Structure formats: structure tokens, C-alpha cells
Image 1 (cartoon, rainbow, N blue to C red):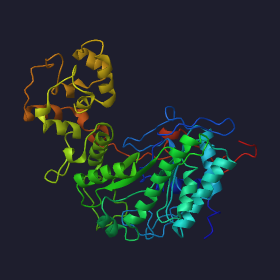
Image 2: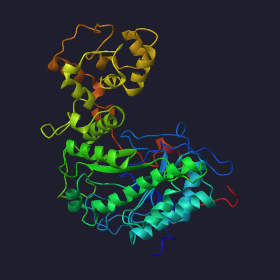
Image 3: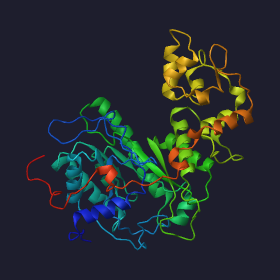
Image 4: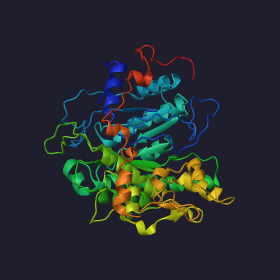
Amino acid sequence: MILQQNMPLMEKLNILSDSAKYDVACTSSGVNRRGNGHGIGNSIAAGLCHAFAADGRCISLLKILFTNECIFNCAYCRNNCNSDIPRASFTPEEICTLTIEFYRRNYIEGLFLSSGIMISPNYTMDLIYQTLYKLRNEYDFNGYIHVKAIPGADPALIERAGFLADRMSINLELPTSESLKKLAPYKSRGTILKPMRQIQTGITENKNEIAVYRNAPKFVPAGQSTQLIIGATPENDYQIMSVTEALYQKFHLKRVFYSAFVNVNHNTNLPMPAAGPPLLREHRLYQADWLLRYYGFRADELLSEERPDFNIYLDPKCDWALRHLDFFPVEVNRAPYKTLLRVPGIGYKSAERIVKARRTSKLTYDDLKKIGVVLKRALYFITCSGKMMYNTRMDENYICSNLISDKTQIPREIREGSYRQISLFDQTTLGSLALDQQTMIRSEAPV
């Protein structure tokens, strides 16, 4: 197959940035690489620009597909081989040009590159590798790159790409192998998990090598991530969180992303809820994900086979606390750090501040407010010097009623129905973007 050369570059960009919007597994944190003195860009964990859409999708990266051509027929995918949509493919040179020109204009801080499967996994992965090689070695681009590894591709190609990318990801797509077999019959759980294990092993071995040889090239320094589609198949929240927990434990993933299912193909065999995509469910899963990663919770503490789904009216931490009132109230001046993490309204940073501040003096409720504790949630579950903030009944129905009345339990965007995928071409995002094909052509001068 010959990559398209006759379609205007901006038309390709319009098609392939739009085709990439359903892939949410992009985050630009987790790597710290300063400018090398001669290349363009850097990737500093604390300083990298993050711009998120209202639904949590990162827009600080140029998020595009290499191609939306695909040989597979996944029922949930807009780009499957049977979809009647405009098709386009970049060349490696075009992606390099776009990345550098957008970076120079301060529109982006890096590149997120995914792709449909064109001809074969090996063919597609080789094109992705060529793109990364050109960006790093010919264009001297030192900024952040997140790339999707193609399941079924030669492990050697994935390894080469891993030494050029900051983060790699492979989408698990659906929570169970049964669902994957039903909606994506040309994919298998084994084919997806094999490169995921390869990347995990490569990261571990590379860290050991760097410990001995400090100048050794880094392999996927920002780790790997994956994505699960939520709502296309009947798995409950307990099954999803159990899969998530296993991925963190067995593959040491940096992130699991959740994507509320959108029936873009209007497939009558797939859910088409009148209320639209299950965005609030997606939100609860993200909240629970944080509890697994930062707060020491286990999936079987948050949910069970008897109670398999999250309460949509309360965040998972508040919901857990209401079901464990015997654990409360907690005395903030004495409770261990891990106990403080279980209190609604106390985040992991607030818990660290509490532990540090109480070494020198006893804390009051005013102190907790200054520290960053959300007292309108925490007041039902804590005491300061043995006293509660108000005369509060430790009654599940009473506390639940007060917590539900807190509007922040449900994000404003969901309450107001204003969720929308931000486009690369939004005027509010990039201002008046007027880049014609000539201005996107790379300068002859070295960069």
C-alpha cells in the first residue's frame, strides 16, 4: 500500500485528529527529561502543560492517528473496516512536520500517536517506529511522546519504539476475554497481554541497567497504560475494578483509563442508552481508581459480588465510609497516616500535611481547613481533640442525606449536561488557527 500523498495535509489532520478523539489513554505526566542543549523541546514532569477537556481528556498533546484505515472489524470502533467514513493516512514526514510546527506555535507540548491496523500489525508498527526515529534523530525533538504499541507486531519493533517513546500503551479494550471475543473477534486477550508483559519486563530490566550504567538509553521511562471501554458490554463495576487491580499488580501499569462507550456506529446490537454515554459511571470508576493507587483500598473493599456497582450519587470513598461507620470517628491528632487516608474529605496530600503539622501542635478545625481538608465531607467522620465539629448523629441515613445534598458529589459538567469532546480546531482551544499547507512545511534551516 502506498501512503496517501495527494490529500492536503490539513485535511488529513482534520480526519485523523477527529478519529483519535475516542482514545482517552493519553497523559503527559511521569517523565522528567530536560532539554539536551541542541534539540527542540523538553519533557519536565512538573512543568509540562496539561490542558484537559471537561470530561478529563488531555488536549495538551497533538493527539492523532497515523491512519484510520483498519483491517479489523471491532463493533465498538468508529474506524473499523466496515465503517463508511473518510479515510486518511499520514506519512512519517508529515507527522514530524505537524509536531514540530504545532510545538513551535506553543499549541502542544508533545505527541500522542495511535493508529488503526493498516495491512498488518508489523507494517503499521514499523511506520510508527520510523516516525519516532525521525522525530528524535532527524528533527531533534526532545519533547514528550506517547505512542500506542500494536498488538501482534514483532517484539523487536516494539522494543525499538520503546527506546524512543516516553510512554507506551496497549488498549485492553474490554474487561473480559468473552466480551473481546464477541465484539472484536480478530483480537485476543493473549495477543494484547503479550506486548504488555514485554514492555513491563523491558522497563524493569532497563532500570537495572541504568543503575549500573547511568548513561544507558531509557526504555519507556514514563511507564505504560491501557484503556477499558465502559458500558459496551454487561460487566459490572466490581469486575472492572478487579481487572484494574490485577493490571496494576501484575503489569505495574501507570494508569488504567476508562472510556464511556459511545455507540458511534449506531450498532443495534450494542447499548444505545437514551441518557447518552455513561459519563457519571466513568467518573466513579476514575475516583475508585485513585483509591486503589493512592489510598490503599482494595477492589473487594469498595465492591463485592453482592454489591457489584458504585453508588452514582456518592463518590466511592464516601460510600465506603457510610458502610463502615464503626471505623469512625477518627481523631486527626492521633490517627495513623493510612487511617487518615480513609476519611472522606482528606486527600493524600492533606493527610501528609496533617501528620507533619501535628508534630508541633494540636490541630483545630480551622487548621484543617487551612491544610486543605474538605470539612463539609470530613466533619461527619473526624474529631479534633476528642470533639466533633458539630453535634452530629452517627447515623447512616442522616449522613447520607447531607452528603448527597453536596452538589460537588456530581461534577458540574454532568449536572449541567455540558460534556463535549474538545476538537483540535476549536477556536476556544487554539484561537484563530490559520495554518495552510505552506506554513506547515518544515524550514530548511536546522532545528
